[in-house]
Image 1 (cartoon, rainbow, N blue to C red):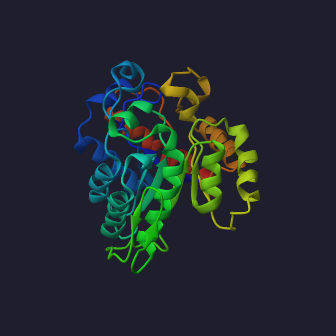
Image 2: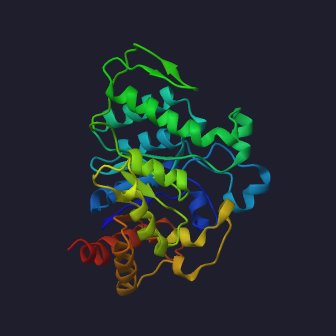
Image 3: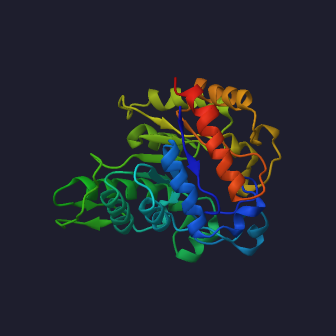
Length: 307
């Protein structure tokens, strides 16, 4: 089992955030990334939204970072830690610009980018940006293929319904070959089909853990699947979050200071196929207690699951 960190105050969703996080500055979040880098965490993750309608603010907050911009900053204060999105809403980005941003991040960091992608769920974001909400799945698939072409071809050439280019020069290429890990978020049929076709990671997010083995069996049964390593990222924190960021008050999502309890919980996730997790903290009062919990996870939990 690998252990990663969802960085605080990159989005202030009530279901998975604590009140003190909203006061953190960028420099203070960087302390979290640096500590994760120093004590053996695998990946630092940020989420992404461009805005929330006013009626969503009570549950979703109004603070959300741009994923690749934020990851560039956190990559700059670390040296080993992978940096990734959970998730970037690809249909809202032009694929050439997205491919450039991720290739730049991977090149500058010497190959530490994890490209986590999702189709999005907030219709208002699509309406404001002029992207048909009903087309987001088809755009996602085409945009991913266009990005792979840009990352891998000497002279990229791509002709799709929404993206068209030919004989162009595109550099730098990503350091990771053939391209950075592609993680896909979600549990819809279309999402798991993407994982089967081209994914190197899957983030089922709100999926109940007991459903994960069946979904993995489905992924590996698809004709597009080619046997390869597959990261499966899941955190019990998501058990507290429903549709549209609703708070579920699920006791299984609460963090703990009891090592046996956390080790058992992470072990159960490993048994259903999870390979990477974030251990959410119990209620803490401030950043210092949050950092202490990270150190505790590294000392008391991680060694038990890495044997």
